[in-house]
Image 1 (cartoon, rainbow, N blue to C red):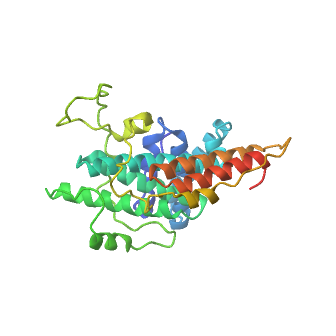
Image 2: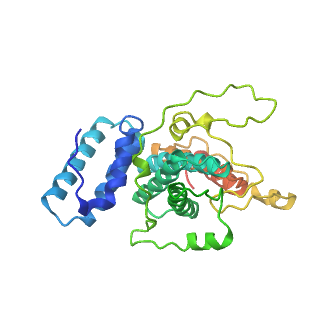
Image 3: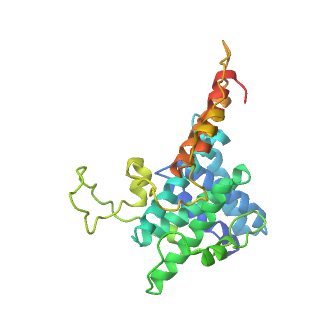
Length: 310
């Protein structure tokens, strides 16, 4: 479907529409929620000119048509499933960009992955306030995208990984608008760059000595094949503000509370989706070595499935 051009007065929704366009054929869930969020922001910003109304009505029509076509897609019809899908997608992009950043593999792929991740965290505002982890990742991703972009543009070498304490304080102090979206000025439309050509997968057998110039996977490859997602460094500071959890015997003794299953309990579809969401949250927590949060979320899922209540 061809959409009318976006007028300058609705510049604030252009990056959401661009992200949606890039995912029309790759991930219809991302495309749907990106346009829905663009519509919500656009309706608030609109001064009801003819150009604005024409675009917003076209987005409404597209959303209605797609929802009818995807009636069996829970990530479109169910908010909980949708939120989990987008969170997982945003986190994959964030981890890819962070890994490449720390290894000093700077380039348009890293800028695009960081920036797209930040846009996806904006879209998650559709479902309410962001978690502390999501807020941190969003600010960090947008700031890093602009920072690396500007460094490359000016011929400078970016500082890899987390910023020193003084610069980190400036980054954390970035202002937010009324909707809670970070007010970092985006680079020159990195999300609009054409994706690079796919590189060939590396041989599964690891080399005996570290390779000097191994081509990292692109953001598109990571999203299409999660097995390419590199594991977060073990000894480095993890993004997201988590402190690695170090259990001791006393803590473990009181952490697990036995759950007695109720015989014949009936689990509703909504409860099943919520349990899946808890499991995905646990997986995300383990990406940051946050074992305590992982255990808590898994216990919530187990209790919900065993008793039918939280």
